[in-house]
Image (cartoon, rainbow, N blue to C red; front, side, top):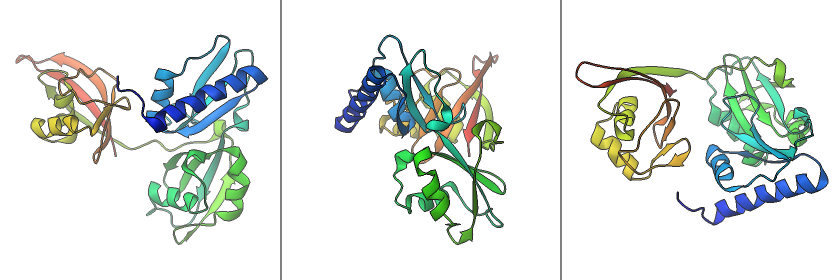
Length: 252
C-alpha cells in the first residue's frame, strides 16, 4: 500500500481529531464532503476508538462525495443537522451540466468540501450541501449560467433523486485481469489499457493500481482518467474456448 503524502496525512490527522472530540464531548462531529479517495484513506488509516461509530453519509447509498460522521454508539444523530438537500428547477435547464452547477456554487465563494453530490435530472437538479450554508445559497444563487432558477430546500427522505445514466457492456475476457476488463469497458486495445494502468491513470475502488495483471472481482469500481468510471456488474459463465463472460456498466 502506498503511504500517504503530506496533504493526505493532514486529512488523516483531521479525521482523528474529529473522532477524539466526538468521544470527549459526547457529540456528533463531521468532516467533508470527502471525495472517494479521501474516504478510502480514512477507512484504511484511521482507527475507530471502542464505543464510537464512524460512517460516511452523502445522502443516498450510491453517493460519491460523503461526509465522515462520527459519534458515540449510544447516540442517534439527526441527519438534517449535518446534511441538507436543495432542489433546483427552472424553465430551460436542459442544456446545463454538472460543471455548470458546481461552477455557479463555487462562484459564490463556497469551498468544494461544503458541496456534496450534484444530481442532474430532467427539468430539476438536486445538490447536497452542509446545512450552515443553505440560507446563503438560497439568498444568493439565482442563476446557473444565464438561466434563472428557483431553489427549494427539501427533505432528503422524500426526494425522488434522478438515477445516474449508465451504458451496459457485455463481452468476454481471457482472464479477470485489470487490463482485460479495462480494455472491454473502454473499447481500447489491451496494450493501450495496460499503458494507462502503468501510467498511474487507473484506480480500483478509488485506490490507484499500476499492476496490469491485478485481479478484478464483481462489484469493483474502476476509474480511468479521461474515460470516467465503470463497474464490473456481473461475472458469468465460461465459453467453450475458456473465455469468461462479464457485464460492465459504464457511467455516462
